[in-house]
Image 1 (tube, rainbow, N blue to C red):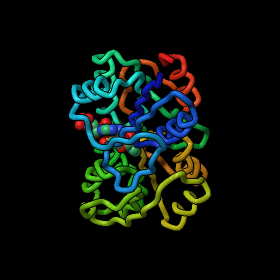
Image 2 (cartoon, helix red, strand yellow):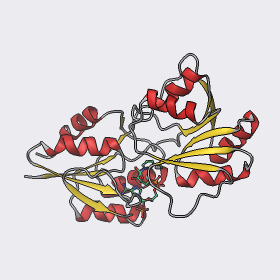
Image 3 (tube, rainbow, N blue to C red):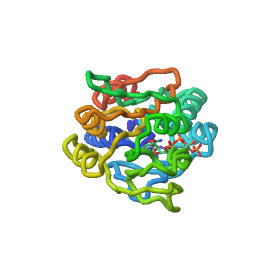
Image 4 (spheres, rainbow, N blue to C red):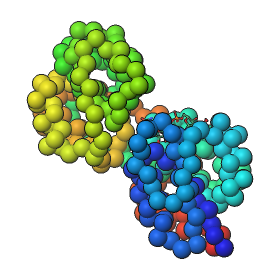
Length: 250
Ligand code: NAP
């Protein structure tokens, strides 16, 4: 009997989990991608793309595809998808696990300013009086910084935005992680960065900017994570694989 594992993806962890499960006999694995990234890293196994049409649509899909377990391995800031996953899994009676990368730990030398959202991050940057700021954010958070026309931004994104950035002074740096501390330090030094803005994404792949800012004594404005829905959470792929094997009907 083949068991069906569905992974809500769009992260390195989702790809790593699909890769780990690909070697398991008797498993069918399907990764779901939102379809927002033009050239995503593709996991092994089955793939579907695009929204489900809300929690109800996802519940229908779980039933139609006879999914046995659902792993929500979306990004820590994908709050809508996480809420839909919780609601849909409950409705369809499918066990659900949240695979959530661990948050960074504050260390001596860190100058973190934690804020609730992008607007508060822009206000914090204004308060710091920083003239050159690295924004390590997604498209949807950038709008808030249009209120700071006097600041020169270095904006790092994975893919070029479809429409021009609405920032008065911005240099776009396109790059896909992981980012190492030495490279992050070089980026911050050559661009004469005075403050960094980031989501509190956590995980090792993007921790280099946090370490680099610490070494350089730069303030980091951190947008707090949205709360995860109630339910079981693991921090790494090995724990997710163990959870899955404990629940499969094979
Ligand atoms: P979101 O705001 O939580 O979700 C918005 C909508 O996008 C969802 O309601 C759902 O549409 C659809 N969606 C999201 N993830 C999906 C998936 N894996 N498969 C199918 N549909 C999905 O999500 P988001 O923050 O825009 O993130 C979108 C994708 O980018 C996710 O896969 C996430 O892991 C990845 N990502 C996000 C961030 C970030 O900072 N937010 C960073 C890196 C990667 P329906 O309601 O129609 O089902």
